Image 1 (cartoon, one colour):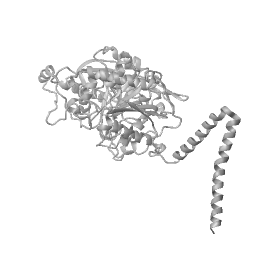
Image 2 (cartoon, rainbow, N blue to C red):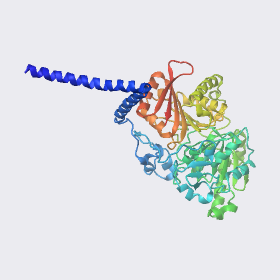
Image 3 (cartoon, rainbow, N blue to C red):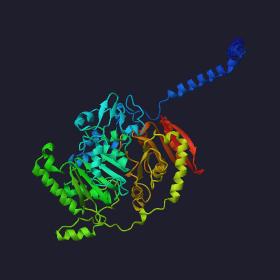
Length: 563
């Protein structure tokens, strides 16, 4: 028995030696035969090992899977399926209605997706495969909003009130309000269509925030963002718009279908809140110039006459002065103060309805804050919180943005157009990008969770600087479509929200809104960044850790390449 065990053991030893010796001998023979080819053989062997390792790891399912294809254009807080549960009255259905359960998968890109046209070509062209919605072309064909030619959309600059071209429309407006003007640098376009009005205002140095609800025309705001123009989903309904008071120099509505005279002029009063003192409200379409157009509009003349009369009375009550009415455009101007107007209205036995500080929210509150049919008195007492010395902040952001330019070599050259700053503070990042002449626009987002935000009102300061932005809670989804931003900058976001919502929820939302081939710059405390990196790895993002430009060992940057 022991003899058999010994022979068996000897056989196993011999086999082991042969298994080792034969491949080694073959390898030495090949090396001696082919000499200089040994490095190639070694490389091939290494590649085979890597492929084997890669194959083994790829068989492990990723932590985050792609969502089903019907989620390609998913907007969590403006989901049509959820909207149907809410009443249509006062457009409440179109407001933000966010799901309690957050998305746990990654929104896929549409079939045939292509990198958008670089700026400024994107202003005129977009790939059909990126926004495959022909309905708007058919529905607005006679108004020349957009045309489909082959594999791309063309934006000729038409609109409901300017079928012959937005340039002529803006020229007509320019005859009523002098443009460009140092007093008009920001505008709000309500019911923006594909944002052709905002695109045209760029020629006058005016940065326009275009808003529209999600509607049956399929993705007006998505078209605007695909063109590289500032836009977001928004509607005048129950709650205030997500902006502070005195934000915009001009507000515009071109047949935007907002019932301005309903509910005691509630929506006009909201426009008054967000207009700066001396700002302009521009209205075109019904009921303006109704005597000429009532037949074309298919409306009764008496009905339109009554509507304009109510509109004029409301404007008077708001102390707005009518600047001009010509052709289809009317312009009113908000006063610098209400003192003269109050005395004038007393003689007419009327008075403005001022908001009561005890019953009304702060004028700058703009996040899920219910509208009230009142206005805030002017002049506003001098606000120290809107006076900031930017010298040190500017120096800090020049260092940072210079570093970003080194990290993203194509930042200067049109690859990145739509940029979001998730925690904008006082807008230093956006201001520096503009100062350095990068061909971008920046959506400055101020989290409502930011410490002391309503006291410091940093978003109000951002608008004071001639920039645009919005309030936001990053435990919810942003009011935009998927794949709408080329570059997302997130400074301190994950520290801010670490005790409020899951890191992965915020990262999944960032994945939803960043474009394929876009980039993320995430800067935070070192330990936070390391945890974020773990999640981005699980999302199969290419992430690179970079030290802070100030050599601050407590801070770190994560550069993510979304390819």
